[in-house]
Image (cartoon, rainbow, N blue to C red):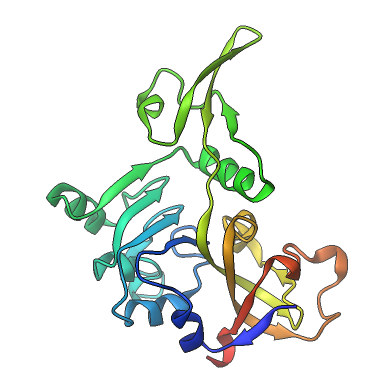
Length: 228
């Protein structure tokens, strides 16, 4: 059963140099309060696995929206993402040599995370054949199946996953609202330690069983974001 902890306790569980998966898409679905506290912690040298690096300005005018805070503070040494064009600080840090950036096709990255959570040995995909994706550090080579070429991509896992759920019950079961489901769902299965920030905490039974998107068995800790 998931254990409820404070934002401060959640940040204390994250060591310098950790590899961290961050759920979210352009900041939508980020664990905003945990990330804000992590940005103020002084910790760094993180490997960030996230769909993107979010944006310097959020949809309501927020300064450094979501994971953009960590990029801005130079707490990330390696960013593994699918696109970074919305955050110009990524390009600036990459060009000056202070940030390593590895880009993976979006669908491939989602499947690689899913494979990491499922204990699979890799993902075979035609995406990226005859492109620079073949030179990607996570590409294990090419295979021919029934006359078609595929790339074998490594599964992805991390030390920690920071995810966000709209409704989370007291056993850690999660329901994601709308598009916040994005990368949160597979990332919850693919890390050694999973911390969920809950927008709303509900009683057990408050989420209809068939509507549970992530089972509480995958969640180690929950932060009540509504009362953080």
